[in-house]
Image (cartoon, rainbow, N blue to C red; front, side):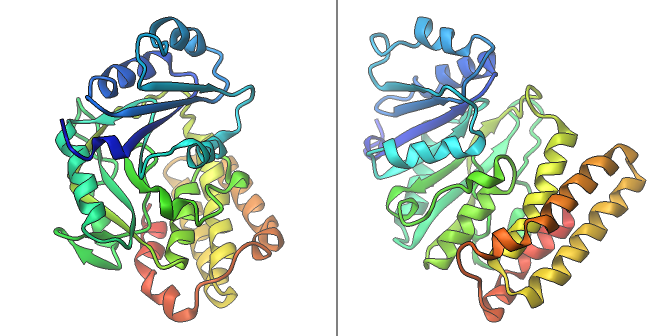
Length: 304
């Protein structure tokens, strides 16, 4: 058994993916010494019943389940920050799990090599197709290297190790975001507090990206809105405004390839610009120098 596994809790947020959740739990519960906390976001597909019947605490004493009465979106992940008592949290989706214990060890070794690291994102790869959703993010890194971890603005909820000490310094995931870019919101909070957010592709988490609940166009609307919100919230207006306009133009150009994107992009853009006052009242902004250091994130924002 890995000596550091007792310092880690695997946190799984679940919503209406019963079969995927079963597969994930079978994988993580097979790792000796790993604590597991499941937060079910008011699923209606029988997930709650499956958890009670197949994954009770009597059968799996290392497992704890919290059932929510309503779907609060990504804000439910903030419950992990209140409930986890171990030093580290391995944040997972209900359709993701570590490839092996060695991958958890790799994440932990990268984390403890630098006490300033708050998050280590793994390579999130589909176990059947080999497609990696995290492929190439090191191209947008502001610093770092393969040995120390690439400094990015990326905390993949489906496969990242988080340092709880650092998480408790933040306000957590932004509840207003609900779905999309909330990981960047958390990363920016950490960066403002002097922490590092890194990517280590040597560690692998399998992520099937279940299509259940993943409405592409609904997500497009949220991501468009939330991307603009991030600009208002964290950057000087002299940076945020031109970037918001460039981002909007980039989103509109993509409509030429898929006209179905028009309505969600317009909704997201309208919501993004309508939220300028509320977001400017939140938190604090990066300086111009810090904004320049984060130019890789701006490029990634326009690239996606």
